[in-house]
Length: 235
Length: 209
Image 1 (cartoon, rainbow over the protein chains, first blue to last red):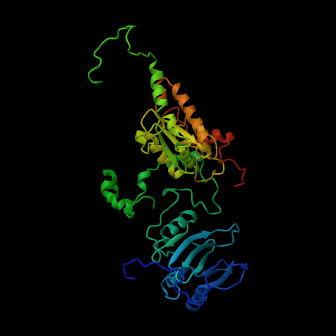
Image 2 (image 1 turned 30 degrees about the vertical axis):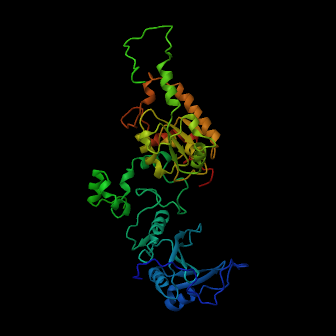
């Protein structure tokens, strides 16, 4: 949209006039129930890339092919009949069953049509944990993907700045939400403390971060020099 | 009036009939009395303890009665660091830097179970098990979170501690950085080995993980 004016989205304004008014659903079955029409549209358009459609507690989950995630999300976002304009979460699930693949989950919401869809893609054990990034569709996916990388070690191909988000960038112990990660970390407490205290708290910035760019002239001289030379930490 | 009557005496002479008031005291007592009753806290609030700390500072409990009416949000003008809440490892260098920026004399209070010990439920990969592993702590206030009365009791304990300080004791204000070349330095591996019997949480297996 080239129009620079802010246009508020009225929830449900694009839905058909016979769509029932929103209300809290009652007596929702565990499996089955009305399917999100976007799931059928996806099957019609992408065919083999849509592996399965589940309806769990009234919400539609679509299992998709890993390599075509970006294309599918882009279509859901752009198509005039879908308009999924809000990416509310990107996360991953690992199960205790070691045979079961890790799932990456995208939660998308269409405000104009009042629809919610959950995309999943399965990453079998033993294969590289990588999925396409949807950063070019939703700028808001930036930190979701960084957090998911930080906690699960899943690489999002195409993300411009895939660094750790919650743990500090030089964190060496692995990916905390994986099932093989011990609750208290791999290193002893004193070793963990020694590692973090030897970090320089000011070295965690890159020129790409907007707040640093804006305040660049106010930074200390040595930081200006380091960042000016293109120093990036924690890659 | 005050400017005209400036005292010009260069020596002290005792005159029982004078109306001037005199107090004799120990310098230690005077200095400590002044310090204890004008502590400026540096609040380091990270969790629910900070809410209790705010309640303590607000009108109902009124921390100002203890000379702490000025919250110092800059460490350079602060006397006492009140760490209220859990400290994740990512904040460990931050709280140490804040402590180093505070000028002497300085004290610190670990408010609540998380800041004192890590609180057990936060015994995980991300949380520091007590801020006394990062900075020296004068008073531990138990509770989850402690009520304002508990924090004020801790503050009064700190005031008592300050009243007992002696200026001649240089070791009170002596800051030591860990020096690996010193004979007193204990490497982390040895700390782990020594503390294993005393509940080093890495070796504990009570949750089976």
